[in-house]
Image (tube, rainbow, N blue to C red):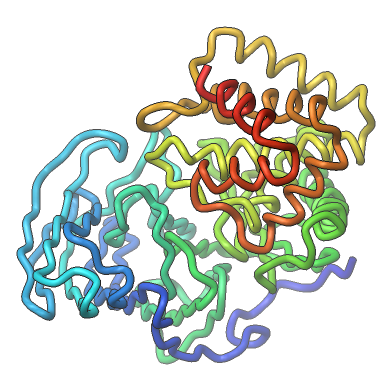
Length: 411
């Protein structure tokens, strides 16, 4: 691996290019001004929805701290805004009912302003003069309910200090005090990190950013990340999005996340390297396994499959004894878990603990070679729902095994 000096965003990244919305994918054009001193923003967002994606209603969610000044839809559509509380905490629900869903595209324009609504305690997202991290948790832009709809984007953002280094998926550049972002990979979110003092290193198959590349945590992520990429690509083929960027942030709240071509990890001090390996393998696995909507029972297609793949990486990198240690802990946690498949959103215990155990049991029943072949075959076009997965499983292992596995998910 090669470790470099502090990087200048405008020097090493390609100039921004506006991305036209794909005919099969929603496209966001965002103009935003951040006010780091007061933790606030103002934004103008245009969402272009291709005809094939227009449904009635279309539901978007936006932070309830934002004051919406205007919403326009072309062609004319019925628009309603309500204050809600639920999966996303307190939020605004924007419901748009198109006159002729599926027959014509839709263009939605919104203007709003207000303080950032931090999510979680302590919060994950923030706007400050020294450190910014924005993602869908703050609902800083209107996102399709369920977080399962992917879109391309271009964004022009003011208020990000020129002394902050920026990491984001897609292309990043600066021009006349503006931060310019664009991405055509398709993601349910516009996320980026801006921090002072970030340094860049190249791993095998990904880029890594941290303030201190010499820390034990950074070295472990670089080493395990390179090994995980090699393991996953041998199984599923080349990483779907390149360049793949991993950025390490400092904040009180633990837990990272992934988007296509982009992973955020948290520096919480030294951790066992086996835990670092499992975590980064799980996040890299989302480059293939990320189709399950977060508010549906199909979310296991994202989280359970990624965690199973991460356990397989742990076995490969650290041995079966280390893998079994993780499995024993999962069994303890999952003892009173509910069904993996069921109405509405499943808990983390069901998705990250019980679900992978069921996949391990499936592996024992049908054989590792069959399950590996099934996942390798699905990876280029992952299933969008549970029925598609079960159909593919039936073709590999037979109807009886597929039905048995579905029953175990619902039990």
